[in-house]
Length: 582
Image (cartoon, rainbow, N blue to C red; front, side):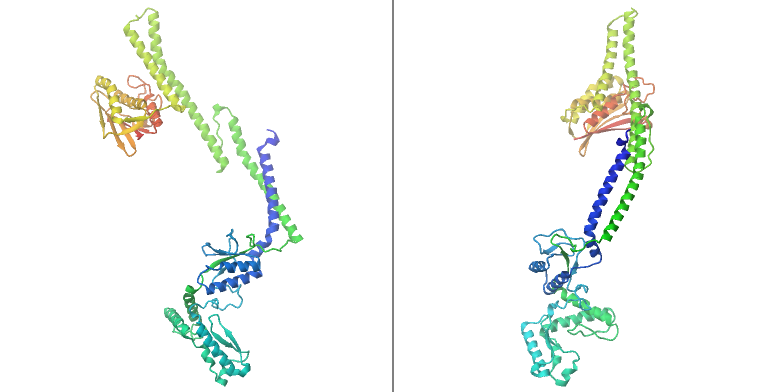
């Protein structure tokens, strides 16, 4: 075989080409994308992400859902130049700054949840991680806000005169408080008696939610066998005992109380306008580029070495298959199956093909022998009588003519049977189905064989349950049932019974031919439908036909889409069952 046509050379050349292309492409892609991969692994975010996160957490803290967040997303996208998408935790889109939702990264940039804020994105977050803008039922009415603001102004004026002391600060709930300069504590008010303590007292809108909060906290503490506490508007406890457990109950109760007033947690995806999470600006240095090129060269070298080893091992069984295929057909060469891959499957298929070819060859030889044996007897008889007449030993009378005609008809019957089987084997056996009644079919077969049954002293009866109908070729089906009846009459002694039965079972019609004859041994049942096979080893046609009848029965039944089975007991009888689709 020329080297250029060798499978090994072509395999190696193809593998090396693929390896070179893949390594080159990988190197190029790595040089363009390694920057974003490194930044993503290290958890780095762009500076604009903090602004986006803070804005969306504030929105979630002041709204019960995300219905109207789209305008805010578009404004943020215009300021930051990023694409912003919000989805539920089940990855169902909620809103996006773009016209439509594009493909999203596998990992979200952050989880927007005002009740569990991210301290890394919101510096200065309280220990409970609850955003202070989530006030829920603690939001004051306009009248209460105004009243507290006036009170704070009066206290501030009282404590410092026209210039005042401290700064007025309004919380997200609308409550106004005084922020004092460094060094001035609550004792300052005791010196002036201005009533600053009144600013920390709950107003009417806060009394109900604060009462419910205390009830929830104390229920939690009771389950932990802790003493009850009283929670104020600052939601910070300073009690004896397990302070952490008490504060945990306060935080849990606050989250339960605020949940109906804030938007549900959402996944935040911040990407470039093109949909990538990569941040621009990273470039490889010359050293990094050289290092990447060295790694690529090493990968290429390893790929070529592995390809050589694998290709050599791959071609070895293929060469064994080629050598076996070139051997003469008579040798029926086999190849060892050494692998469990495609080559192993090919070797197993080759062995199976060789085995089937060997079986077919054996069957062909056996069939030629059987056909010669079957045709020899009638031809020998015809030749012998004709030579006897020619030599003047026998007289050509009517009896001799009838005998020769019977032998010719037998010879014609064998040839017709072989023709039917040949058409079936070639897939050219045609049936012409038409609606027919099974009762009429069995009656016609019984009538055709009644004279032979009377001569043999056998009772031939039919029994049909109901009136089943089917679609089939009446001529071929009469041939099927007729062959079975003929076979049954041949093996049933005088005084016996042959019964034709039919019934419908589901979407099939079952036709049974049962006899009370000699039966078939169990070891012979698998071969009853083989061609030229007879239970009588002597192959005597007086006790057995040509050996083709049952083979034709099976072929004609299969042509109708049905099946034929046999059950027999030696000395009791045999039942052949043909099942045909309605």
